[in-house]
Length: 322
Ligand SMILES: [Zn+2]
Image (cartoon, rainbow, N blue to C red; front, side, top):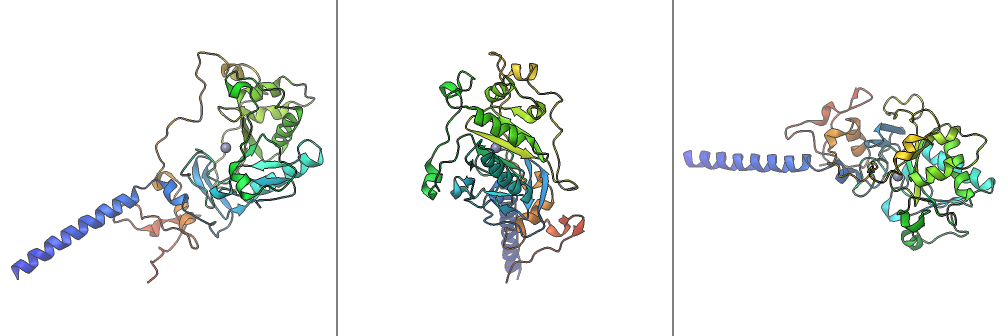
């Protein structure tokens, strides 16, 4: 009896240790592993949750991969998902720019994953369905095959691959400038990120209205594509806006700083620690598991997901299917 008891104790201790080790390992997987594995959207009311670089997306809508005036690229990434306001914005920009004769159509890069959140590769932001990358290369006059959409490369609009920090006038045309001006003109648009050389080229042009230039923000990279960022939809309490850009057209000292040789401009490519589920808004656990989603490990080894809430209301813990 004593021996059996001791054996049981050993078995129990070993099992507990394995459970804890397993639980801990699961709990410590970066959030991008879960969000990167989500294949479809969370069947919930459409909501951007959290902030651009720390959040997730409920009720995402896909950008149709081929529209009359746009085509989505890199379809294998499954990142053509956004909040409905972002999908509407892209469709409207594509239609308006084509109707004005400025741009034949948009080649659209990454929006967000089906449930938003951190990504396995690239991008710090693009997490809440309000960011999109649009190529600075016009759409060709035909429907691209899926293979072409994987393999065709965008073209840099800078000279010498960007080393001179000047746009190449043979590539960056007035049409590019008018497309950017139009993209910045819609009220829901918060910011557009472009290479400082592109911002400078826009600043140096004659515009009757320069107010939209405030929303054109210089950033590293961004000479193959520009990045549009929409404001949180009005009244969406779960969504955190950024501060608006500084007043003015942003064509002065702030922009000049990017061109000073010894001053290393801030770039988006710093190594950042992976975000864990605990770093994201708690509702992102619900977004991940809703419908046929992924059940993230409960917080802590002995944790319980019962305190996860949607808009303050407690949500019962999902039980495994038996
Ligand atoms: Zn981007």
